Image (cartoon, rainbow, N blue to C red):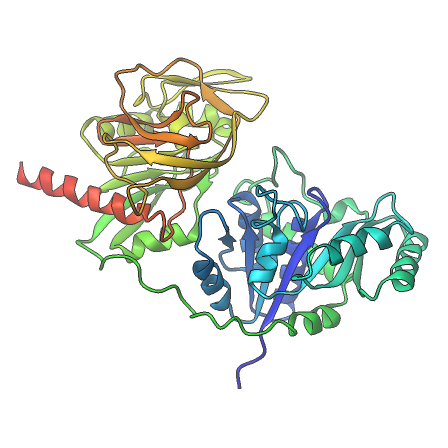
Length: 464
C-alpha cells in the first residue's frame, strides 16, 4: 500500500528568518530517522539548494513560477517519494507580482500543501498572535497549519509566545528553536556559503539535524504533512524534447569556483545524449577531449588568485575557443573568459577569450528576472518560440571596459541589466558568455539547442 503523501511548505514572515537553516535541519533530522526526503526551493537560487541537497542526500529542485509551467512544477513535486519539503524565499506573501500571483502563498496553493510558518521571534511576545493571524488569514487559499518559533530567547520567552498563540489562534506550535549560533550558517551576499566551499560541510549538516530534532515535534510535523492531498499530476513531465542524437562529450566546470547548476539542466543534457565530463578549473591543467564546454556561475572572485595561477588551463580554454569549441558561459564563466578580473586584491589575469576587463563591485549590478530576446547572431536560441525567454541574473560584477561594438550580442533585453547596455551575451567565435542564468524548461529548452549546435559544429569539423 502506497504511504500517504507528506508535503510541507516552509515559509516565513520575511527574509532573514533563518528558514533555510531550519529547513536543512529538518531535512537532515528526517533523513537521520530513516525517511526519504526530497527538498525543493522556490525561486532561482543556487546556494540554498546546494545545502538542502546535502541535508536531504539527494538533489534539491527549484520551483519557479516565472520560468516553469505550472504543470512542470506540479510534476516535479508529485514525483517525490516520502517527504517533500518545500522552502520558500522571503515572506509568505512576497513576490515580484503586486497581486501575489508568484508569491509563496500562490505556490503553496497551487501545490495544495500546508504551510508551516517560521517566525523569527526575537523582540516579540504577545504581538506574535496578530502577526501570525494576519499572515494566516490574508489569502484564504492557503492553510497555515502550524508555526515554528525561531531564535527564541529562552524558556520564559517561549512560554509567553506559546501562551499568546494559544489564547488568540488555533494554530499549533510545532517547535521552538533557541537563538543559538550552533544552529546557524554564516550568510555572505544574499545567500548561505555554498556547500561546495564549506569545510566539513556534511559534518555541519549532521550536527544541525541532530540539534534541530531536539527542538521540533517531528510527530506533529508528520501529521500535518500527511494532510496534503495527492497532487494528481504525472510523476514526470511529459516528453518535450527530441530524441537523443549522436552522443557528445560536454565539459562541465564544476569545482569550488564554479558550481551553480540546476540538477534538471544537467539531467536534460544527459537525456539529450551528452556525456558530462567534470572539470576542475583550479586543479586540472588541461581540457579533456570534449565537444562542448559549459562554464557555469559561482564565485570565481573568491578563487581568482588560484584561477589566475593555473596558466595551463587558461591557455587550454583560450586555444579551444580559438579553434571553435562551442562554449556556453554564465556569469562567473563570463568573468573567467575575460582578459582580467579586478577584485579588492588587484587584477587577476583570466583566460582572455573576451576582449573585456571585468571587475567586482560592492553592490549588485543585476538582480532579478530577465527577458531575453535572441538576436540573429545568437548561435543557439534558448527560447522555445520566436519570443523572449525568461532567465535570471544576480551579480556583483560588471564590465570594467566597454565591449567593442563590433562584437555581436546574443540577446537584447526586454527586462534585466545584463551587460548594462540593453544587451547580454558576448559572442566570440562559437563562445557565448552572458550574465543570464538559463533554466531548461518547456519555454526555454536551451540544453537541446546547445547540443544541436555542438553536433553541427562537430559535423562541420569532421567534414574538413
